Amino acid sequence: MSWGFFCDVMVSLPTVALARAWKSRTDDRAMTAPIFGFRSAALEEAFTICPDEEDQPNLRLAELPSWCEATGGRSSTTTRGDASTFRATLILDRGGDPWIAKTAAALLRAARGVGEGYLLLVNDGSYSGEDGVLLRLEGDETTSIAIPDCRPLVDRFGPALFGGGELPTAHEVFDLCAGMPRSKKSATKMTSKRSTTGAKKSNPKRT
Image (cartoon, helix red, strand yellow):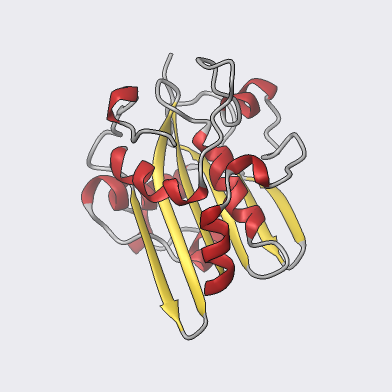
C-alpha cells in the first residue's frame, strides 16, 4: 500500500556557507543512524535507503531544487545581506524516491554550527503508523521531535502544495508540531488529492 509524507526543509546560514554546501554531496555529511528518529525501523529505512540500487545514490545537495520541481514541490532561496535562507517543500511517496529525505537531512547537517533550520517529515494522512518527526537545528544541536498529530500540518501543507496556497512560516511549523491549537485560518481542508509522481522517469538525472 502506498503512502506519502510531506517533506519540508529550511536552513538559514551565511551565503558563503550555503554555497559550500551546494558543492557537497549527501555522504560528505556524516550522519549517525537513525537519522530521523522514527520508532519504525522500516520507515527510517524508507527515508534513507534506495531499495532499487546496490550502490546507494550520493546526490549533490544542489540537486534538491530540481527534485522539488520534478515532483511538483516548491523551493526558494532568499538572501539578505550576508545571509541566505533556502526552503524546499515536496511530497515523498513510497512508490517514488522517499530516500531523498536523506539529502535534505544532509543539507540541515551542513548548517550545523553556522546557521539554523529544520527538517519536517509529516504523514499526509495515508500512512497508518506514525504522524511524523521534526528535526530542529539550533547551533550545534539537532533535536528529533515526534509529531503528536499530523492533521494540523496536513491542513496547511496540502493547500500550499496542491492549491498554490501560502506555506506556513517556521514559527507556525514549530507551533503545529508542538500540538498547539489550530487557528481558523489554518484549519482549511485539503481540496486536492496528493500527487503520486513516483515514476522515476520524471526525476532529474543524478550526477
